[in-house]
Image (cartoon, rainbow, N blue to C red; front, side, top):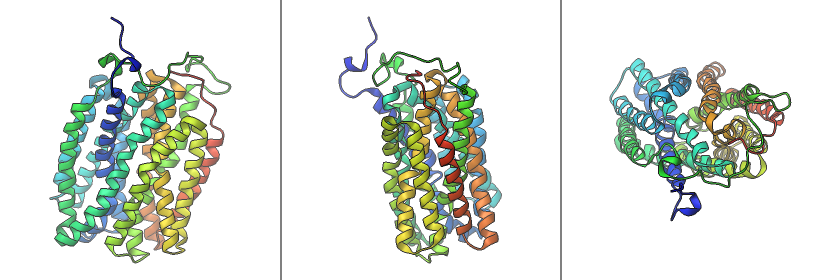
Length: 413
């Protein structure tokens, strides 16, 4: 009996269930465990008497753990299926968040947040690589973008939840916040474990999207480029994104409170608007890159994000700050969505997981360095404007570098 194709199945193609499971994964390992950090940071800073550079190095420790996991993910996938690795990672993240809610020691806090970063890497690499297994090129950008919507949903949630917890429980608010987020990760990790499947063939399905003949072997040259050249180019662009995006994500709430003199609830409301616009970031730019090409989508994403950094750095007032929040939200998850689709386009389905791991390793180097360096710059200069200006300049470099990205083959898997 021939394997069923998507057109032969009834109802929703299971690829969209994979997207849902991916969105819950990203919601947990990044949205709750990472992007909530900026909201909880002012309360932690007061409760644990942290300096600005302490804050930056805590974030950097998380990214260092992520960097290690990204490097080890291809090896881990030899011994564990994506489903098992993703589920186990989410459960570890949940347990660590719960322990963080009770700790008062800076070094223990840093160690736990580093382990959480590792969990994020072991969850993110396999779940994003599933895009290339379950979707053909014409749908990859859309699917990756829909997965990344989990980030925006979590940002909206924490933007309202954390200020309410702080107003209700005072100095214990940040601890209760981490406790609730850890419990949510445990529940969602269990749900993801039930929903995920490793390959469409496991269910007798084909990847979603129109099949096209392979016209190019990605192991061969394309002009001056080989597969290694494509990886180096994509990795360099992704590194620049990593250097900059979490400078904003780590310090924007502290910037609003310290330099714009916002109340914490007002800063939380602004941060929630970031989450709202994030909902459109990955999927909007992902669909755009499906239609216009990965190069054009990346160029626009870097331009919009750079403008967001310039607006907040210039300190032109509340309207400019809100414009910065809107632009950052619209663009911040565009680059990961496009990169997840691009590796399949350039290097084929079989290489997608390893290729995504390699370029994400470059990205992780950048995000490990970025927040810590930004914290040192802000502490030295006495203002967050300096690291925001540097981030804008690096986005300009990325935009120029994207111009020279070659077109992918007509079909690479």
